[in-house]
Image (cartoon, rainbow, N blue to C red; front, side):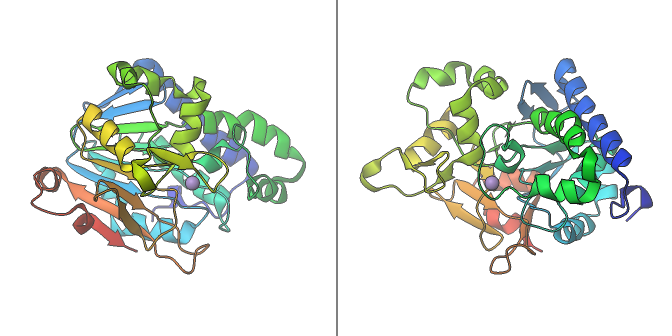
Length: 313
Ligand SMILES: [Mn+2]
């Protein structure tokens, strides 16, 4: 891996510089409203046309070793040279693993070098300021690393970066992508202007919580949702998945959020969970999705299964 992507020996000022630069890129892209030739951005919503090649990475949780393995396997510097190749991260970069700060630094470097084809979605772990939970180690990791300057770094650099992360991505005709799940929508009129609702999801606390925290489940009695054991978000049933997919003309939801053997399917194979963290989850596996425009066409036509594009790390 090239030197400019090494993250093990950094100073506090490197963090401030690289993370702030990434926040600025997000803000500029939002103002411009598009990236490259294939992407439209609005607020916290991204809409892409089918890329030539697509890689999707799930939860990392401070596991720099697995992240570097995935980057090596896809030969990321070569892959990202072409702007029609897209790399999407599904959120949950921090907590649990040993290298949360290094993972953040790496991802920010990646976005800075390849602003038009790397996209970072926000996970619930990047949203502690909005929906607090108990297993939040990131602030104390940061305190251990930078000492007294932690509050300035956290409030002036890290939080604005988290707030700038995108929340929902759609790859036209193929897939919607988000960290947690699909929000339960009671009023079908929502879908008349769903893109606008998703663009503004940071201002809609219910929508935001469900995007970040929901999980798919098979629910009894055809219930559309039930309360989640997580204490935040909901369990959503297949009816919710079908409603979203038919209204967005997409075939799949790609999401992270749940540890599994690298991947799992839910709701009649319409939901693919991808999990990309290994060290903090020794009982589970990690994986990533890599597919091409041609394969996406075949997946949509049911000629091949989406799981054939999943690679265990
Ligand atoms: Mn999560």
